[in-house]
Image (tube, rainbow, N blue to C red; front, side, top):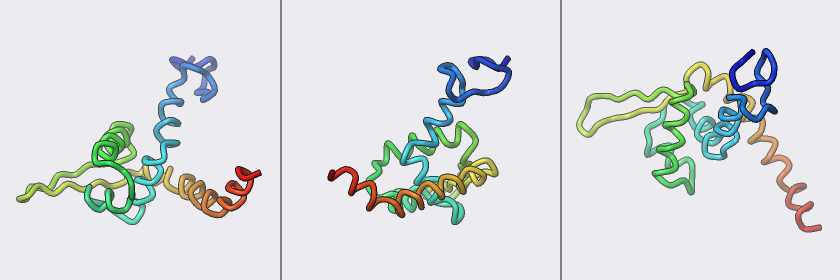
Amino acid sequence: MVPGCTTARHDVYAAQCPCRDVLDLLANKWSALAIGAMEAGPQRFGALRRRLEGVSPKVLTNTLRRLEEKGFVDRTIFPAVPLHVEYALTDLGRSVAQPLGQLRDWVETHLGEISGAQET
């Protein structure tokens, strides 16, 4: 049995399954947007912050740390003055970028319908 799960395999519907932590991270808007922003290649913190309009430095820092901790992002420090830090998707991060991109596309495509439903 998998620790925290009710069966021999992971079950995101099980209350204690560790899958839920990963789902929570990936379903977070800033995580989904940061992963999308890094699809084009490594990004510096400032570039990510400009691309993700409305994110605070603290929230972006926490998001990038969580993504790095779970193996979706690599953080590389270049010894320069001033310090140069880049964030890039790992293979795992690239593998989740496509489904998250499809979700972002779906939202943009259907926003009119969603907004219309709220008005009724």
